[in-house]
Length: 66
Image 1: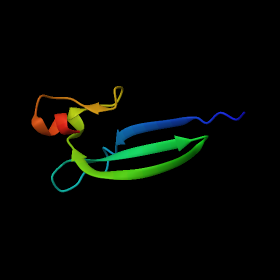
Image 2: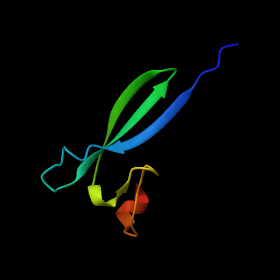
Image 3: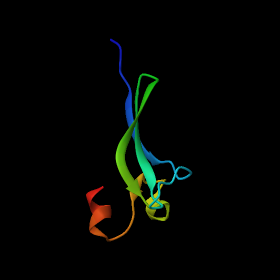
Image 4: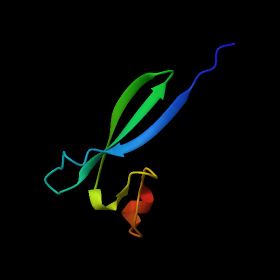
């Protein structure tokens, strides 16, 4: 029986800031070694992103909704 491996990662592109100074948030889906990247159409300030935990930091309502 073949086993399938699936991972989902969320990351930002901090070098592609928009005019508001926010970085786009992206999702990468990997299934059995094949990758698909998708933009989530959400921007976040790079200072408020924890890349190790792959989530936003802060107490603001916008961060909790992410």
